[in-house]
Amino acid sequence: MMSKTEQPFGVYVHWPFCRAKCPYCDFNSHVRHGGIDEARFLAAYLRELAHLASLAPGRTVTSIFFGGGTPSLMRPATVAAILEAIASHWSVEAGAEITLEANPTSVEAERFSGYRAAGVNRLSLGVQALDDQSLKALGRQHTAAEALAAFALAKRHFSRVSFDLIYAREGQTARAWGQELALALEHAADHLSLYQLTIEEGTPFAARHEAGTLHIPNGALARALYLLTQELCEAAGLPAYEVSNHARPGSESRHNLLYWRGHDYAGIGPGAHSRITVGRAKRALSAIKSPEGWLAAVEAEGHGLASEEILSAAEMADEYLLMGLRLSEGMDLARLAFVAGRALDEERIGALAREGLINRNGARLAATPKGRLVLDRLIVELAA
Ligand SMILES: C[S@@+](CC[C@H](N)C(=O)[O-])C[C@H]1O[C@@H](n2cnc3c(N)ncnc32)[C@H](O)[C@@H]1O
Ligand code: SF4
Image 1 (tube, rainbow, N blue to C red):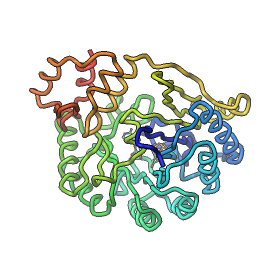
Image 2: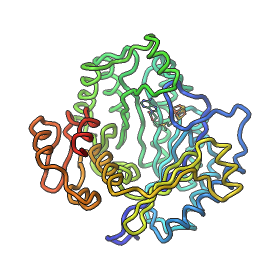
Image 3: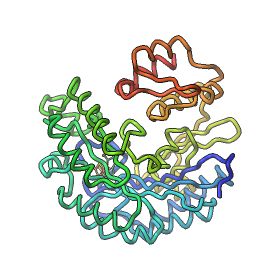
């Protein structure tokens, strides 16, 4: 068991392959029509894991997250081997949260029992939309019925399940999103991730957006959709605990909370990031993004790390502010002052509070729902 003074510590495993590339997505995800050598990749994951364990010895792992790309394309035996290796390098807290991100096609759903047997205890399913026309427009490989069937199956195998939806899609009205979200809430278990569609540079959606052929809600309608999301989820007992994440109190994702609360994690796989504190210094590491480039580096050097830096006090403070203000619980002002070496400006806090954008509750500072809509502005003004 982790002692009370010990900090949470997470392990992130990035699987960078997908069956097809969705036109809105700029995650480090790649399609390899010829297939990949999974055994060779597994050997590289295990080597890089050993390297990261040597940089963060003696920690107790409190959560593990398989993200992507599409981790549900991994064989359950690959997941099991990585979990065993994690447990051989660190002690893993009893009941640690072990999440795997899955796509809801029927082929992947067939693997759910295998993931459960490997030790995964939480599944996060990328449903994205609940009608077939929208799924097609998003370039998804599954229908709404298939996604709901996969979710029902996930509920049978895992006591903790979540699904993702993307809203503010092309042509979506507040009425249509309200109906879709109400349906989602009927099916939801203890957690939902609801992301407003972001136009990411370099994606096919960005090209269409620039050409004026992709019309998505913006301005007042986008704000209305966000506020409707907060209202409906709160009424259903799944309030937001982060900008895009909603849970029954107590069912928040421990792994995601660890990022937003500024704790340490080791990331393995192409493009994965790590934050490892030694004494008062925080190391920020990131790996080569190209899967084959990363594989070659691990095979040659034992790790695929492309960059490593020690964060300055100001960088650590900005990162904590940026992450902490995403959370409904907000951030700890004393911790921020300790990290930054100075306290935030009281006058600026007062001015933003009078505008109804932040709330100060004793030693904590949190963005209000209205404030979370203008997070970038809050961060710039508070960090100045
Ligand atoms: C790592 S991704 C994908 C997980 C899984 N491969 C899938 O697609 O179901 C995690 C989530 O980010 C969200 N996402 C990805 N790109 C987005 C975008 N441009 N705008 C909003 N949400 C996005 C999707 O909801 C997705 O499920
Ligand atoms: S949204 Fe998921 S399935 Fe689609 S390309 Fe991105 S990571 Fe892959």
